[in-house]
Image (cartoon, rainbow, N blue to C red; front, side, top):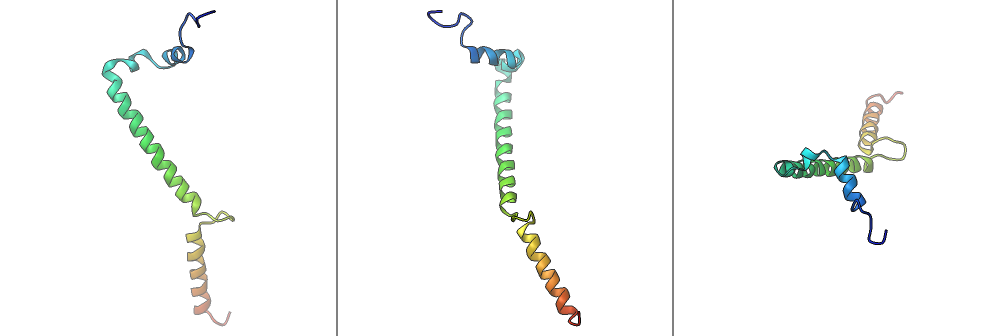
Length: 84
């Protein structure tokens, strides 16, 4: 093979085999682009939400907000019951 593969560029051929032919038609191209765009946006939003949630969890696996509210709750209980 002096000048490449006679079947053409292998990754392009693999895409042609993997994606249904009707999906690559001209009439579906705008729909496909819109769907891919919205999937990308939703993926980025989900990733951002997950990263925000991960950042709020401490080493013990408890959310810092939960830890703070439970501490305030326990202090309020101890202040209401000084004899214990």
